[in-house]
Image (tube, rainbow, N blue to C red; front, side, top):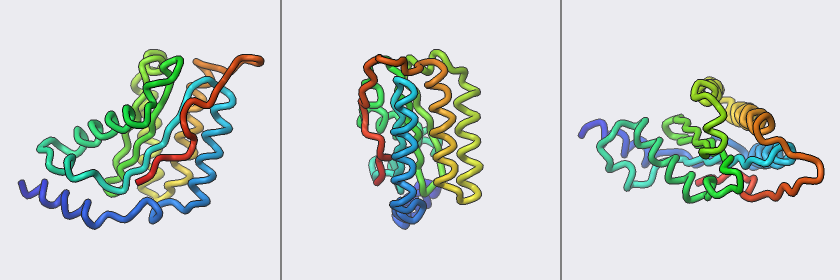
Length: 171
């Protein structure tokens, strides 16, 4: 009960995403995603949430479980699951907690070992600890892009529509 109350207070006082990333940084991340997606048929989405909605703060589970539930919800709401080859990847950051979740659709997830995804999350986590939010996100986008390029390369003459927005979803 006390931990839940402390969590609610922490989230009430959460700083907005602009505290962590400038608009120029958001543009650079958007550009990196757009350039990446020209080289493969996958889709990359970045989601930045300053704090959890109250409905999630009321849950009795531990923070890791709650963050995973929220990331899965965002994966659905942002339609990352709805790509032609089931090869969308969501990089989710819960900023107030500096918690990271990576959700990969079943097509790409079946081709990449779990420890590879965990290594990307770990690397991003280290960058966040140093306060290097932009650099960490750009590196994570590059690592995910490399995986998508390996398993779903874009072929010359192949249709490669941009199925999802490139700009990070931020709230």
